[in-house]
Image 1 (cartoon, rainbow, N blue to C red):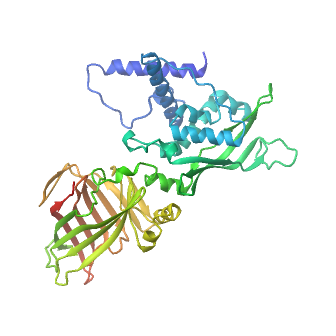
Image 2: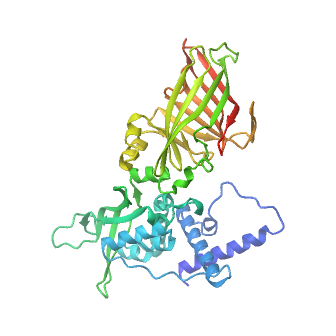
Image 3: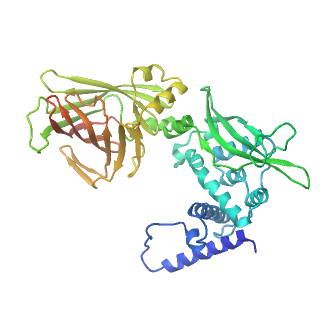
Length: 451
């Protein structure tokens, strides 16, 4: 019995034992939770264990689909042979676009191939191969679409097309540059290029090392990945903004923050000193209105206006760029180039989003070293004058917040947001006009959300 078969059987037995042991008693998860494979084969690294467990579960589920009986292991699909750079690039591209995890694994070096090439035992080679997949997982996950309803019509291949796979300079097995006549065993600095259809924009996935393997018996060649894949910053920005998702997610009925023309939110405003005492203020009410929304393919531009009831009737306006996954402030330069995807992504890379969807507890992002956002745990219910809101999100921003308010210069801001309702509460800390430290709280009094 091979080592691969042994760990499959060990894991299957462990799964059955776990299911039997849980019958008739409450399920409790150990802390910290480790991959099941790690507990049964403790010599593995945690990364390798995660990959092996995921592979096992995929095979078991595929067995259920084919045999109508959960628990049947499926024989591995014959390995695809990529003999040219284009074939290797297409293999990776098609695996990503079609979410074919089995095909994805076929693009990477196998344990036996690695063991033969670098002269290590098969077990160590197996751990290396699985850790290679684990370290490449961020690229795989980047193209994942959690809900089928969010996928563009025609899938990801309706958004991206394969542009090419460019290999770097050939090298010998020892890593030296291959001179004329030398045997090329690997290529360093390779690039998979994806093109966004109809936009004239290329995005890159970098493949630091590709091995060139030769079958001694037949002389046939094949190329395989031997280092973790890395997405370019442009591709990360594109995916994080959700620009590969269907544009219908931006509709007012589906977007977490309902920014449609005619929507408004009215807030009661209080200002307190550092001692907590209520201070006299020139303004005690704020009105936020959505006054315009412009559509540009998979993004929207929303124009918002804040009106204050101070003696001068102060007003402030901002433009927000809406993508399926994020909301960004959009200045004049951003608005002028919004229809160009390359310029749009340049703007998105330069600034942190105001919101990102979903607002998952523990997630965080930052802009340079001076501004950081994080999503914290929120109370189950938040009471404001407009009523009780259940399970809101709680976003905290710290640092150089800029001109977020005409009467205070905040360096810390908390926002409570209810999905489909908008911002229900804001708390800002910063310096007032007289340079004293103040706390400003705005709570929702009433709102209008257009259907």
